[in-house]
Image (cartoon, rainbow, N blue to C red; front, side, top):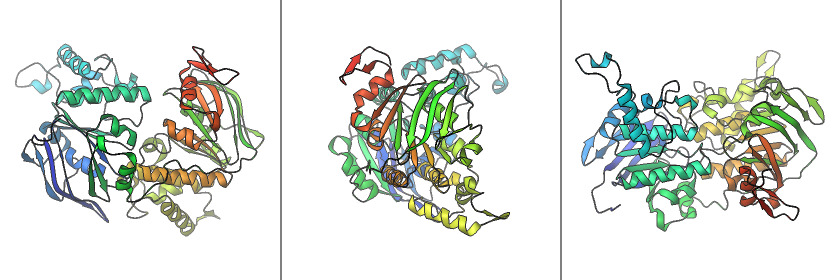
Length: 518
């Protein structure tokens, strides 16, 4: 990658304003052929807006876009793709009940000729052959005829990349591509990105996992409050410099763990089983404890929490809250018993996207603010506004529709609505996924404050540094079972991964025994 050549993509003085918000202001940057550029910034910094302008989903107010030296003004996502810019969103845009090949060539299927070609039969075999060639480029081990609904998250992402190649994209925008991937799947994605770079393709890589930018990116562009505040050489910078540019202040530690007094057991789970999903899961959670759950993708962590919260039924096992056995048959029952759940999938399970920030935050607490059949709207608003301030939710007003917020701010709204309930137990499934470093620090601090108030917290995290730093104890799961429960002092990355992969157990002397499954 040589910066002496002409950029393939150039953005000049681009600005975009929404009601009450200046999303972008005079943003400049360029991307060169065969270059991977990281686009970083806190939630609300303007990354998503800039990405959607390039993708043709939004129209800029002022400024100029150049592709291969020619000015462009994409009016739609289809037009942007035709120009050579493809976007892979964090939420995939695949049709689940169609085949891999049909998704890759959606609306561009090879058909038998003639003037009525759009109405003629699709050349299935040719489409599958062409799809296989693209799948080979990205190293995907899926069949062109397989249904997308039967693929893993990582495989669906590979199909999205093949779909981008099918439109002959020269610039590929990847929005949080590793957010739902395990470590092995992430490394495979990095291999794909390196391969695409060698083929001369340019990639804009958006991520909140700062360690990733040093793995695959050449340069780093940092946005803050809608403006570009820096461009860095990935090989000549470090995390501290990036964070300083992103947040405009020093962060002493992303994982600022503060210890709370650990009390009596508040939640006890014994022998919890859902056939074919989890089996014989047992653990205890104490007042003021942050209990981390670690494991590889598919280990059963989220499934366990869904059963505890009453979203899925159990086939066997017992649950006690404050020493009393309970039968949680629905999420409503769980809320009545003092449980809250911040789900992994915030858009489908954590929010009502068409409702306002205020109404989303009030949903679990309607009974709390009800007085003799009347709603205490002032009290609810005051409480909601307090949490919006505490969590630094960036929103023009409490009436803003949640779907118009950035992903990180949506996640903060999910957190806020459960905190308004003052739960005894709060289950947090990937609470900082898709959230910038400044917001992560704020959420970790808030978790510590809740623990000091005696709330028991269960935290599922796929980020090893997070689960090791923030947890008082760590439950490691492997294939639907509890493989180990470790005190923080005994939890090393090697030990956690040994249990999570089922390749080792700890001997009596604390050393790893290789080749044994727990």
